[in-house]
Each structure stands twice: as structure tokens, then as C-alpha cells.
Length: 128
Image (cartoon, rainbow, N blue to C red; front, side, top):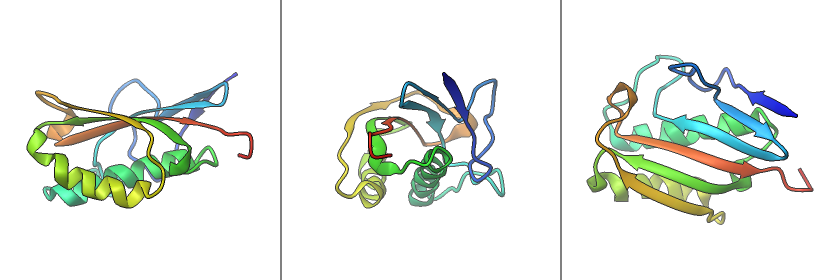
């Protein structure tokens, strides 16, 4: 059975899609950009933008009683590869011992002129 994930602590989708979907113990999160759900804005500071993305991912996973440790695949979209190191520093602070498979690509543009977008796949393990 398909379950739609939604957290009021994450920004509302900008279009006709869900924050996440769970099917057969696999969770697919839509790409998250650094929108602050309270102000609906993206910080001009890259580190703050990256922090907000990781917080958004975390709260959507929490809506399914999961954590960042359940993530098995991450895709990162950067408007400029020059931002890779700054994003990676923030990412490493959140992911700690969890080292999922990961891809990172440079893109021409992102919604709301964001610098970064991240989508993840997570799995509900037997002990969740």
C-alpha cells in the first residue's frame, strides 16, 4: 500500500507532488531545497541553506517514524560545483556514521533560484 508522507515542519510542495511516498518499506523523498517552512524563504548563506535542507529531510522522515540513519541513497543537485565542499561539511555533520550511496551533479537551475536540492531514498528496516 502507498502512503503519502507529509510534515507541517517542512515546506509545502511547490507543485503537484508529495513531500514523500512510502511503498513496500521504501521511502522516496521529493527533492528538498532550503526553504524555511516558517518564512517560505531561502537563506542567502549557503551553509544556512544546506542546514535547512537537511532539517527538511529529517522532519519528513520523522513523519514516517524514521531518521537520517534510514537513508540508503542520496542525490545532490548543485547550481555550482564550487559549493560542493560547503554542502559536504554540513551533510557530514548530519549523516555522521551513516554513509549512504550518493550522487552529486551540477545543474543549470533549481526551483526558487536555490543553490542546492537534495532527494533521498530511505528504507524501513526490520527494527523500525
